[in-house]
Image (cartoon, rainbow, N blue to C red; front, top):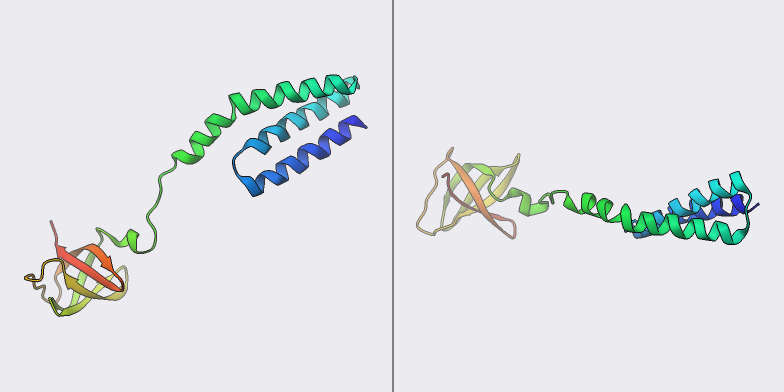
Length: 143
């Protein structure tokens, strides 16, 4: 009976981990599942189950959790939305000067203006996006 209780507790803790995502409840779940196995094999007293749970859980929290957190947090952060467009190449569709223009960027047509007001970009020229200002791509010459 004790093994079943530990098994249910382990499953519930693992399910609760989905809501937190910090791997703490998952480590407790591992301790509960290990204890369920121990209780099922030995059928020992409840206090011994509690000791096994504590030892395994503390071992997992101290030994495994830090490396899991490092692996999850180490992943590269990918730029999204307009930040993903910075540094991309665009093609001038309509002359771009201080008064505006259009470029094709990532398969879409964008309003554009030069980074420096004195710059002028003619039709067909390839440029680099240096900034997104609202719905306008701020462009500059290719390096």
